[in-house]
Image (tube, rainbow, N blue to C red):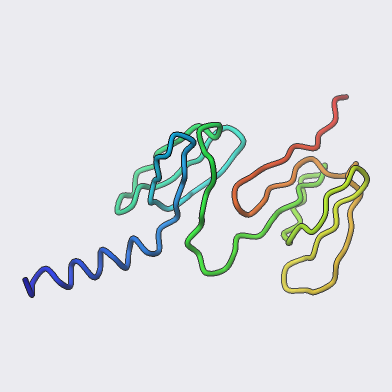
Length: 129
């Protein structure tokens, strides 16, 4: 029993730090999230280094295990990404607080292609030509 206790403690510590992908069917994947797009979520299953992919429309939510929250991002038409905490989205503007500041700024919504929230949600603001 004494041999297995350190292994058990290490296993508990590893699982406590894992990201969690909650699917709409109730399944939960403990993993490391690699990339989130509109079409898919790419991740490494816990304890493995291979990529697995889940279609984005099957994902209910993603809970990241990082101590620092993943920042929101505002993607502008020119591709520039503002890393921030989004405060308000209206039909005319988006207010946000850039990382490591306390100043609230705004950007016109017409200049924005996409909003990518830190929890994995994404909102396309592209207008048809």
